[in-house]
Length: 177
Image 1 (cartoon, helix red, strand yellow):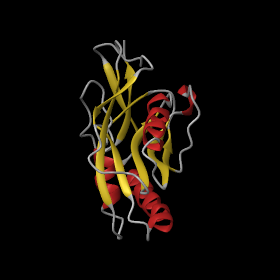
Image 2 (cartoon, helix red, strand yellow):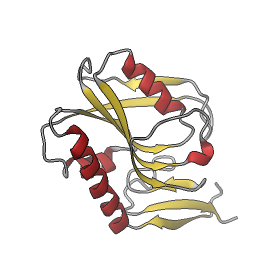
Image 3 (cartoon, one colour):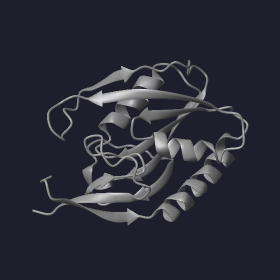
C-alpha cells in the first residue's frame, strides 16, 4: 500500500447492523440453553463481538485469545503463536469463536486444533467476514456475516497497521498510486 491509499465503503453500518442481528438470531437458536463461552480473537473481533453479545439474551461467558502469525510485512509466516492465553477453562463447554475475518484459514485452523486439545463439548465459528479467495486451509464457518473480495478490508474493528478500527463501515483500501 502506497502513501496514497484510498478508502472505499464495502458495507455500510446499517448493513452491518442487519448482519449482526441475523447472526445473533442464528446463534440464539443453537446456543440458548448451553451457557456458551464466546471466545473473541483479538484484536479485530472486539467491535463485532461487543455488538453481537448485546443481542444475545441468554446466559453466556466471554473470553479473549490473542494469536500472532509472526513474519515480516503483511504476509503470514504460517507459524502461529498464542500471545494472550485463555482465562476460562473450555473443557466440556460449548465454545463459539468470534472472529473478524477468515482469510488464509491458517490462524483459524490453528485455533480449532488448540481448542480441541482442551476437550470442549463443541467448537463453532462465527466470522464477520470471509475472504475465500485467499484460503490455504479449509475452514468451516458456522455463522457468517459477509463474503468479501480479495481486497484489504478495514473498519468495524479491522485494521491496517492499527489504523481504521474505529470506522463505523467496512471498507477496503486501494492503492491510489
